[in-house]
Image 1: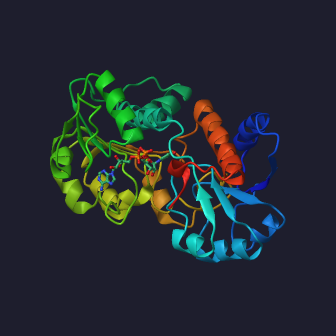
Image 2: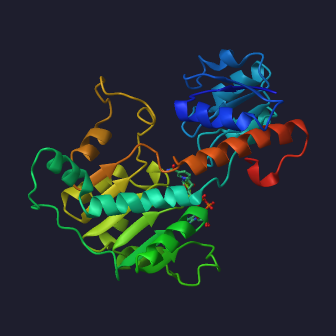
Image 3: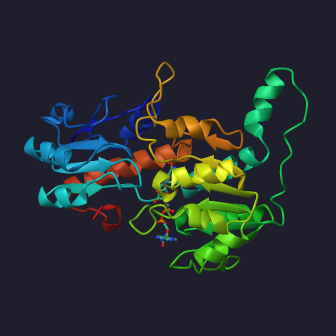
Length: 329
Ligand code: NAI
């Protein structure tokens, strides 16, 4: 099977090339460029394309892929809100993904953001490099014996609950489907979770229902000095409302691995460019906000799991033995 990889980074090549040794029937060509209506033609003659979390898999792109005979889209990620599934179904296209490669990788990054913004590591790192050893402005808060509120307790949210418990925090959560394995977690309504938590971490998927789950009304329910972390999807948070909340000093800190309008920035080196969206610039202007660029998944273990499942998905498709859990529908 010949697969064209779009938006392939160095770490993708390294990890997939290593895994290829176990898949002698697969041939990969890597393209740094991402998929778009203009770049679909590169996939002519291939059996499948492989795309990533922010790749444009909208209706026109899917139609164009179908026109050149592509029947299989391999997503080397868990999320699929970038795929027009109705169009894929109309075109008879199979879309496969990697549902849970390393929940701990994402949860550990969520806690990294929470700790870094709480203890002002982003500031102290720079200060000490400039020989400024003053502690002014670096006071944090203990997480020990505080309350962590986890929204969405699937694979990643559960891992975050366990990490927070390890910090000696009381863990409360909101999910329509409580996870019975988390016997140390108290489930509550979303409103109660927002009202009672000192640290709020978002781990639910982006759906119509969760779009702008964090907005001016829900922010107004939060405790003063709350730490908010989002490693899930940018549009869970209404950024304008959050920026207003930051300006009103409602947050002790905000840690974002994802944010609205991240699209053109994610995984790109844009150091010589002016940013066209004011959201990124405004978020970066606040001293109590840390932004990372959708890197929560990025660990050696997660990359190895992504490579293995993606290539196994390709083989399963070829052999007519697709695992239902990996099928996007
Ligand atoms: P999962 O499917 O295991 O868990 C999602 C949980 O959210 C489920 O328990 C579900 O019942 C719950 N949920 C659904 N709607 C909800 C609502 N309205 N309110 C509260 N809970 C709700 O998914 P997983 O693997 O834990 O991933 C969670 C999210 O993390 C993904 O949807 C994705 O957006 C994000 N993600 C981010 C990555 C990154 O690198 N930043 C990497 C991988 C995933």
